[in-house]
Image (tube, rainbow, N blue to C red; front, side, top):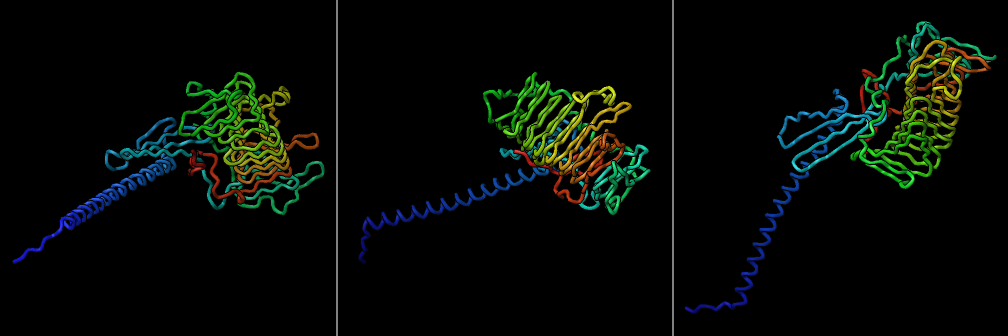
Length: 421
């Protein structure tokens, strides 16, 4: 029998093909393993993100102590963890959720606040001080309205009567004491702790500063007046003056907090920021403070009354004509007798989309698209002061966007105001 010789080249080709097939099979097996590992890793990342969202949701439904980090029970493996931390940024409640699964770590930060019902939204809560509410001129109140037992009636100022067809366009209910904001709401208004700031900013040198809320706060501080002009500040930055802060129209402020005894916002300022003062906040004309912005004034001493207080020392928030504020305006102080001045003044054609809260005297000449909580109204017209009168003011609750999240009261349901960066 004859044997046919196989050429060496054919054997090499066979070995080469075998090696190629082995490599391809190995690569295929490796690809499957990598795909499985990638799939597991992707699921871990997705779960880490979901847990971080769950941490924010936890803070919406359960009480978290201020400046206290709590661990949320995941009923899962030890290599998974979720911690929630609550603090305040200005007057906004800030919640940080830190989710970890093995080497994956996701941090989410959000402002949260109180939400209103979709239907039967509150227009006005007027504290019962044994005086009726008097409406004059082209005043309109639309929405659920809480009134003193004496109710509401039309009035007359300098020959102008009430021109509406109804006194209240909505449900009328009986009020009592003014609702209280959450107790820890005011903790942010005490003297700020400068030791917590990891970095101070020199605005004579640094004119554009941005700081993530995932990093430590940066601070601009002075014992003298601070003028914010031709400057851009974004994020986790606070501006603190022992005397006064002035914001010029050339400034660009986003999500920063301003703290001073007196804050003056010049005409035509645009931005998103919080102004927190202890004596006076003045907002000029034609400004636009976008959502979520806040003006907050909490006095350190009682209001003494008109006979002992001059215009320069008057404690107030005044919002100029043509200004738009989307967010919240809060005045909180103590009054003695003979307080006949307005502590919160909303001028003609001024517009607030959100909430106004004043536990003393409020003068409304503009429009609030949302809700007002007030102890008393003042109308300063024709050289006279009219108690519990509204003259040409408007409160329209139904036009407030459903997505609005704002002031938090004791029994408020909470929602996310803004996701941070």
